[in-house]
Image 1 (cartoon, rainbow, N blue to C red):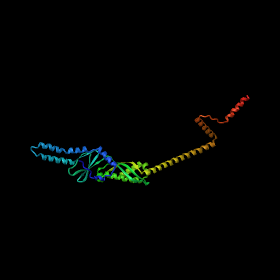
Image 2 (cartoon, one colour; image 1 turned 180 degrees about the vertical axis):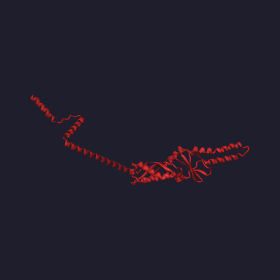
Image 3 (tube, helix red, strand yellow; image 1 turned 60 degrees about the horizontal axis):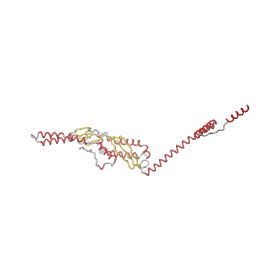
Length: 314
């Protein structure tokens, strides 16, 4: 049976986190050390099987039980000095209680009685869900922030010798860091600067955990909850802000249009022909839309009168 970590704590000290429970269930369903255990037992059983065969062969001239005892003792010793480390794991080996080496992956051999595998560290990227409850933002708005942390162990020696339980420590450090960062931003910045906040929390955690042999891959804020009464007030404030912006844009547009009208009036005042062309264009547009006939008085009728008089004189 595999040995537990020397920094294990009682189960009641583990933080109550739904994300950690889900992660543990997924880990149990996707990975297993059963094959490694059976391989270790099988290798350790070789001396015992050999002693049984030898006992049956020498039962006429020797005491068979003595051979069996020797085989059993050899199997016990071999079981204590062999260990199977999976591809994604590293084993921390101690010699006389002091750190000796980090071994693995594969089958590792140790000196009997003086070496021991005290901890097996998973080197894969792991996720830890954590939550900052009732944290006050910079504008004194209470909020519950739910986030997830992605991290990995890069130095198994430091992770086991510098801290007692790095998994539990990661949880508490991430929670306190998130509370500190949330207290420096407003509730509006939580939604507009979420990526920047994620990077800020990740950088702070990286600086704290790097000396423990742990590196932070990413931090992602999943959900932000605020009281319902504050949600209504913030929603009303947002609507008022949007309406204010819309009115300001409309006023700016009207100002620009009025400036254009002033410039057009100056042009029409200086050039009367331009005003006449504009009037004719407006009349033409109205005729195209409605399909009516428009009669416009013009001096061209005087020319026709002149032609009529000329024909009568002839």
